[in-house]
Image: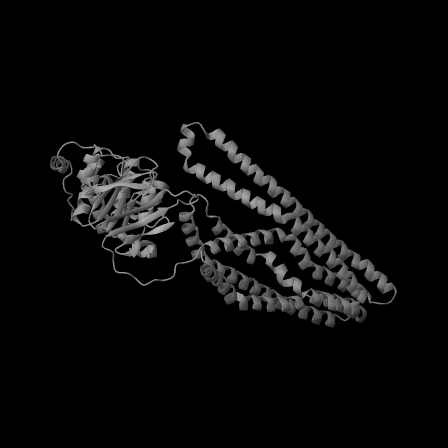
Length: 584
């Protein structure tokens, strides 16, 4: 990623904080008045003991009590408003960033498969929860400590000095807590992510684990990771809990000790008896934010870690700049000396392939396992980045297209068919607005319409994540219907007949024939030779290089796959695959 693109993302994050900065100012302003009003209990005590008790005036006591009640009500309203402000700030940050974080997860998951999880969304939630929780109040109240110190000094310089000593001790506990838990909490979070990722991957392969009797072994491996996380988190939590309780106990001790110091000063005639109570209450209030700071430090460290991870994620991701909208593509594909290195690898799999695919042609892509066929398909669709070279669709670099705008013109049936939780209709319509006519048309072209009607609710039948509830062949045929939804101009089919029965094979051949009549450019990756008879061109890959590319009949003869005349073979194939009929 270029430096300019990083700055673009960073400036976006900074702009969100700048937009909310004035609301932080308001929260701080409310904190000022709240902390001034926190002085009310001390002055109330002082007036009751030094004035009311001496004068024995019930009218004075009633008036003071009514005034204190009014001031407490005001303080309560200000605290509610401050809390609402912080909740609104945290919600706004979430709303501003959640879409970007979501896009970043999927973009980086595409480029770094297996390394990216949904953890950033949890981090964003953790950050929002901390900002709207009680722990953040410590950071707003602690700066007003000098207010209490000044009032304490007005009571007695000795009490002020003792308050400073107590504050230094409690703040030292906070620093010790920070240094003692930082690395542990960071390590615990990393181990938790590893454990969760390992578990999620195993859940996806539950059938294989059960069938091969791997449950105990996999559970043991997960258990080791989970125990490592629990041990690390427990150690960090023990440290945090120890210093939080030490801080709380110390604060209570200092607050109680204030009575003794106050009594000593009162005996010497330096302060009044009422000042003893008022000073103790005031000291407790002055030290409360520091105590809360120590107690909430674990949450602060976790929120800070979440923010750091989000920041790192967004540094790797930048939103594509709006580019001029291009006219709808027609299907001419030009591949210019592309070199492709799969994500998380350093070795090129595709090594300088160049070829042209005219619009409306059906191309078969063959080669031994590991020759780079699926990698080549991902490169043609712009899914994986190129180390060098260019894939051009109608002359335009396919990586310059906005995937949201280009997607409807492309069709893709991957080797591992992924259907999503929802109805069959929603899956075929790619979870966009369901056009019933187009959904049925795609299903009819793919030869899956009759099969879908046999389901309990037809097209409204819900399927589980990954296509649970459908057989491998059914998933493949629904996936084919999705690939050709709304007649895309360029379609890539990766092993489209790997799970098909004879009926499915015929339906696939009919689909390819229909796409040919529509002028659709189609690339078919396959190990089965029969489907190659429907192609116009065949490309043979070997160790990432294009070894043969030409007319299908010539390549098939050259490879020794066919020996009879091409015309006879095509004629026999046409008998098996009749043109598809679209029902109105």
